[in-house]
Structures are given as structure tokens and as C-alpha cells.
Amino acid sequence: MTTTTGDLTGARIDGRYRLERLIARGGMADVYEARDERLDRTVAVKIITNAAVAGFDVKAFADEAKTIARLSHPNIVAVFDQGVHEGLPYVVMEYVPGTTLRDLLNRRRRLRLEEAVELCGQLLDGLQAAHDAGLVHRDIKPENILLKNGGRGDRVKVVDFGLAEAVHGDRDTGGPLVATAAYVAPELVNGKPATTASDVYSTAILLYELLTGEVPFDGPDSGAVARRHVDEDVPSPQVKAPDVPDSLAELVMIAAARRPGARPVDAGAFLRRLHAIDVRPAKGSTGKVPRPTRVVQTTMVVDPPKAKRSWKALLTLGLIVALLVGVAAAGWWIGIGRYTAAPSLLDQSRESVEAFAEEAGFEVEIVDGYSESVPVGGIVSQDPGVGDRIRRGSTITVVVSQGPERYQVPNLAGLPEDKAREELSKFNAEIEVEHEYSVDIRAGEVTRTDPPAGEEVKAGTPVTVFVSDGFPPLTVPNVVGKSEDDARSDITTEGLEIGEVTRSHSDTIDAGLVISQTPAGEAPAGPGDTVDLVISDGPEPVEIPDVVGMDIEQATEELESLGFTVKTAQIWFTGTVFEQSLDAGSEHPKGTEIWLWAR
Image (cartoon, rainbow, N blue to C red):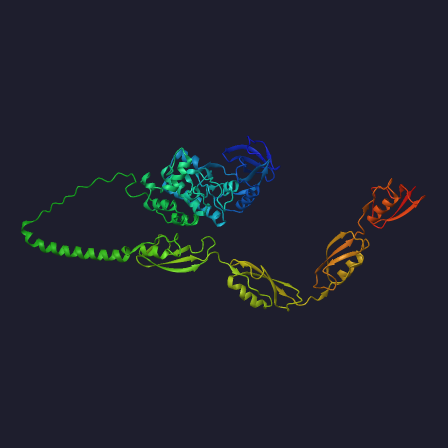
């Protein structure tokens, strides 16, 4: 297998994709701007150049590309096609005009707080779509984040979902380490499989870099850098950038926890917590110069004649002030003081959420619910939501995942249609009714369903209910052995339709007659049902061998073994064939008569 390539600019891939310009070159692949000549559009073609690495599997690569192609999200670079060109696997992707996040960081070093949070939010939104589909990226880094030209909007595009692991090994078993050392999750360094929490870690490192302008661990030795992820905690980004607010710095450190279970479970959980963050700069770090202090005259001038009465005025004033302070304090407590922001319980589990909430000073009410993305026992949602105003010590209701909502299609055979509808409405099935004849089920009762009874489906799944119209009113005529024209006439006269007509050779049924039919003769049928026919083309032709020069007995035996009838004419009892009546190489049906002449 070819393992490296030069510049393939100008080549045509799969007779369709014309490579127009080499736009990126890396250790694993080259990327070209290309023209899809069939659809007349610009695409990006990524060609793997180190296909001989251990564990490479073309089929796994193709399967992974197909899975990625099913992803449809504005923050994910779409995959259109895949294949192999001269031994090198390739994928055809959406062409994104613009630049990479790495290019942006090279120019600006770090981003503004709100810009970093917005960009990370779009990245996490795309990641969650992949996590919901069972895909783990495994190599989140600025080089794999594309920024579209133009306005803000959905300008972030994540590229290379799952392709690294498709090349280097099975994503379920981890495969060799292919993530970039500066962003790699500790569990990958230790040889454990990548999970959604691994992508959360890498995204947290990327967010750290957006906020501070550098990664937490760096150096010339990539192996040493990777080990630091295992041995050291990621420091607070406030160490490098004091303007990062406390809540955002804390979230970065939680998402970059060395233990996967301490991080948000997936990109969606990370995103929900990021949305609850106040991104205003930390206090004292705005860079504004404080206002100068005003000089206020504080010397009290006392009128001597009124000095004796001043203590009464002061006492009265003190009582009024104390009363006002008390009313204000009570108002503050009633209106503000007894309230706080609801903490996030979304990253807890059924086992830990009560203790976590109690430690924060709240009660918890647990409600079971379903989720397509949150694992069994994880927290799906909470009320009040993260950051909402809540009274101290009050109760937060959390919905704990029971996993995906699935229902078994009930066995409805024999039930009346209205009863079947009632059973399917229990999981909001979209019901469609079709009618068919049945020799077993009475009219008006259900014969079967699609999906069939016992299959697990989501709520709202379309279910087709087949209802019996009773015993079929017609009988299929037996047309085996009849001519094709007579068979067609008999079938249509009975009110049935001609289905598929095929032809086959037969040693027993003459050409033009019906060999077999489906359904068989005398089977019940309804109006408009079809009957398939197989028509005979007679015996299969057999090629005549050349027997001239052979002993006549040997020649006779060979021809008879092929199904021919042999006649002989010879001068002596034994002899050599010098002529045969049918030319060698010609084809004739079995049973054909052949004369042999011998001398």
C-alpha cells in the first residue's frame, strides 16, 4: 500500500474531484481545495498520507466516514464522500473559506473574555451533536477549529470528527495515542479509551489558551508534556490573566479535572454551565483609574446657646437612623438577602446530588425522566435552573435520567382497531392504518404491526397497524403447465394482476409453458393481488463436443452422458468415428438425435 504522496494538484479523484490547490499539509494528511465536477461546487479533499500506520483499516475508515457524514450541524464541517485513491484513503468535506483558530491566536495571542466564551460555546454545541451520535473527536485543538469568513453567527466549524481514531485504531478500545500533547486528556496518556469527557478536557485546555494566550503545559518534549496532564492539576487561568472572572476560572479547572468523573459528562453539560457564567471581568481588573477622593468638611460648628439642647436632637436622630437601618435591613433580607443563585447540579449523579445540594445549603427533590444523551443516573435538568434566583435552604427539583425513552410495541394481533389505537397512544405513536385480507383474523381486527410486536421504539414513532378485511374473496387459479397467454388470461379473469414474469430452462416442461407460479394454485387472494410466473424456455442447450477420431463406443458414451440420442452407422463392429451429423461447438437441446459414422 502506498504510504506517502507528493503534491497531487491537478489530479482527478474518482473521476469527479479535480484537485486545484494544496491548502494544508500535515503529518497525517494533505488537504486540497477541489472542484466537484459532477455537482459544480468547491469542496475540500483530505487524503491520508500515512495509511501504513499500525492498526489502519480501510473498512473501519470508511464506516467512520459514513457515521460522520450523518452528522448535520452548523458548527461541524460536513463530510460528503469517502473512498480510496491509489491506495490512499480520502474524504470529501465541506469547503470552509476562512482561517483556523490557530492562525487567529498567532495574530492576537488571546481573545476577549466574551469572544472566548462565544467561540467555545459554538465549539461545544457542535461537539454535543457528535457526542449524541456516539462520536468522540479525540483531538480538539486550535488547528482543528475553522473560522468562517464574514460575521459572527455560526462561524466556528469543527473538523476531523473521529477520523484520527478511524485511521489509528478502534475508538472503542482506544488505539494508540494520536491526540496533541498540549491538549491530551490524562486517561488517553494512560492508554484508556477516549470518552466524551476526554473531549471536555481538551476543550477546557483550549478555553484556557483563549483566555490566557498560552496552554497550561508546554515544552519541547511532547512525552513530558503529556505526562504533566497526568501528574499535575491545571492551574487557574487567573494566574496568567487576572481579569478572568472567578466563576469562569473555576469552570475551566473543573472541566480540566484529571479524573474524568469530576468533569462535565459531555459537551452539552459543559455548555450548560458555560451559559450560566457571568463573563464580566473580575473585580479590580478593569484597568480604570479610581476617582480622586473628595474632601468633605466634617467639622461641626455648635451654637453655644443651643449646645444644651443638642443631646436631645442627637438622641432623636440616632433613634430615627437606627429605625431606618432596621427597616432597610429587614427589607434587604426579605427582598434580596435570603435569596442566592441556584448552584449547578447537572454534573452530579443520583448518588451524589443530595449530598452536594445539602453541602450548598439546599434540599433536593428527585424526579425520574428520560434522556437520549444523559447516561442512566445522570442529571438531565434542574428547577430552578443554574444561576436562577432561589431562596436559601429551599428545594431544587432535579430530573434523573433513566436513559433513552423506549417502549415495546405491544402485541395487538386479534384486537379491534379502536383498542389497538388506545394501546399505541400510551407512547404517542403516530398511527397509520392499512387493510389486508387474512385467513386467520376476523374482519376489523388487527393482523400485525410494523414495527412488529416486541420491538423497542421511541415515543412518537410511526407505527403501521394492519387491519383484517376478512377472508380473501378470490382463489388463485392453477396455471402450471399452461401456455403463457392462457395463464395470463386465467389470472386476469379471476380479478388478479400479473406480477413478475421470469424465464427458465426446463427438461420436463415444453418451451412457452408455465413452470411454476407464486402464490400457488388454489391459494386465497384479494382483488388486485399479483401472481408471479416462471415460463419455460425448454431444455437448456448443450454444446456438441468434437468426437471425430474417437472410438465409436467412447464417443457414444460421451454424447449420451450429455443427454443426446446417438445413432451409429459402421462397417465393422468396432471402429473410429470419421464423421458426426451435428457440428462440434454448436448448441442443441438435450434429447437431440446425433448420427455417428465409423470405420
